[in-house]
Image 1: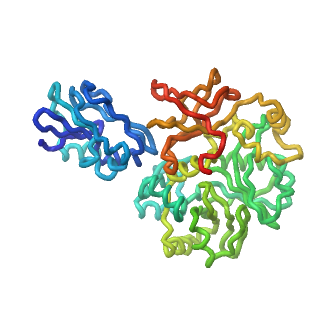
Image 2: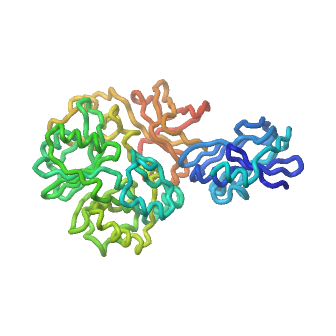
Image 3: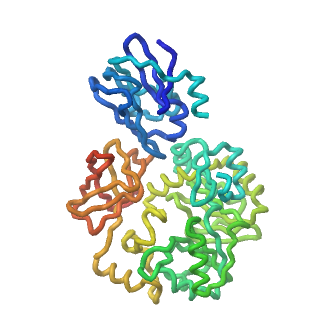
Length: 120
Length: 340
């Protein structure tokens, strides 16, 4: 699996063969506050780069996670249905949101160091 | 944030790594350990809130009749040493502010919303009422939760619920804004360190305005600027129980008319049984009656989305529909409190 890359819209992704795993950054979860509901797409739904994939409701506000590249959903993290707080406690690990088949690779995200300087 | 007002607890908030926000011109803690954690702490044990941004005004007891002309509740016949939730009304019967009075032998303590302190002090001046604004010289801390009283029995004489009391250091009432038992304690800034020591020694943790908002919403309590504004009357805000002033007061005729005719807006509580939060400003419809959400958030106890909506007239049906970012989401009007 590749190292995580980050987007300016505060998602992270990692690539393993032709599957991308997508989540939100620790900074994003911290800004959102307590996450209480996530609305996932259906398996098989296709998204173009930059379109919203997951709606994230937090006590403070609502946000969306966007597709880092063109992709087709293969798996959603169903554990978050009953334990959405995992996105707060482990956003870049067990708090991943969806996995998707890459339709058009665009691996231009920032490295962790680049993202750190972007948010600081 | 540099030009914002700071309460005497500002250093405490920063030392305890709170997330600070601008609230009504004050730099205030939104949360420390997370809104849900703080919410749960108050529901199950005890937590404290710095509410020193709220206005604190001393009024001599001789001014009570003049004050009574400006509010929709009967302060004159209220028992001494009792606290009163009431509303300053305009000539149009709408809410200038919702406030708490603590009634003592020699004076009244008026606690108003931070955003309305200037409005209320000008209103008092315009009505020839003498007062002393002690907001900046004092602290106000709300300690809330089922275990608060047992923690404080060694430090103060605990009044009955909705009563107030004072000693040489503290002026306080057994009131709050969370739906839990608790105390609101006011004291001179010089006693802050002593008071913080009491809280620390009893392991009572700080909570932020985020939890204060989810707690008050879950407790079905209105927030000025949302459920009450200078365009909304106490009747429209479903606060008829507050209207106890039988004498003439500002806006009384309009308010009495609304009580008798139902020809007015209606504030209703709602619940949504899906993974959507209808936030402030969301449009809602009940039959052909339009409304807008005034406050909406997640209820940690019910584990559902709840809120208040203001309808243009009496809703036709309890089954309602929200337009949440273009999606139609079903909800239900709740005619009892969210928490039984």
